[in-house]
Length: 410
Image (cartoon, rainbow, N blue to C red; front, top):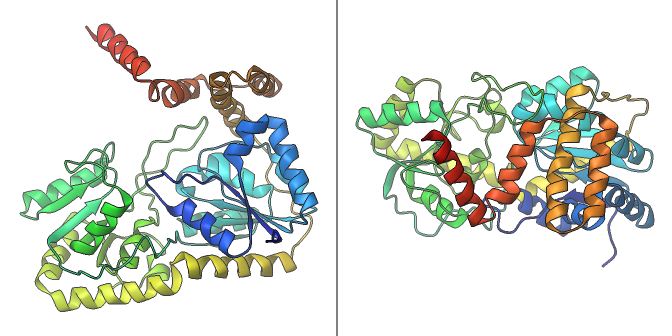
């Protein structure tokens, strides 16, 4: 099969608990795009070798559109590399979690490209347009063969929430308030009493729940140097919106700006802004099955039309092609500042650890030389990467670190 004119540069991880990126990759490939796993290329070829490989692949295969969908916190490539690609191809950055990473990373990467595609916030779309760039909103979409309305629609759970609880005071306060007012919420996820669940189990929970809750406040914790912490007032269009509605279930979501453009309140979902309003609406919808199921059906029809991968990705590709045909020149982009360079340099520490673990000291040295060239570093990120790559993956090292911490506390 001949390689198409579009290249998706991303990272596929079959074992990831969240299928969103994998789903996008599968759908891009179905629509004729070529795919390169940027993580695999980097580990195989290193800092400069990976850039050369991608440039050669684009040239040799006549690629016209590059869709770059990196991990939200990665700094694999310098801005100069992406800028060098623009004369030959139409370049697109697909960015998730922009409420956290637009300021410290995304606006710079997008500034070196032709188009920014945002999953989670209309505000970042407008912010980038105000800077002079081109951007569009593309709500997180999912594979409907994995997120689906099950044949058995027996509702055995009144109210459920699946998501992170650890470190999320806002969510804990909402759930505690409901519990104190007699609402039995089944809570699952990291830090929840029910523990983590698989993607398959999560879909089952969505299907069995009369009411599925979604909270939209952004976390205030970011582990990037010079980043601007997300305000507790910031809201995010979560992927849970599409996940629940693709399962044909009722979604009760905390308000987030732009929700009206995604699902119609009262027809395809319902919303709340306070603990008191949440409690009131839970009581109402538990007592009014007909109203609840009518909204669930409306959300399901909307999700199938707009938020299933097999519909959303072809539509996105058509929009990208339309913009490619009108490609403008002269967009200067946004030059890297000290904070961006610090993150770019600090990310080299992660690859240094990865290469040293693989006994590839030449590539590790290359990462070190990039740090020296940039003349900046955030050593706190070294600790994060060491925990991620060494402590968490080696039980003995993890036990040693725990013992060391306990001894210091004694």
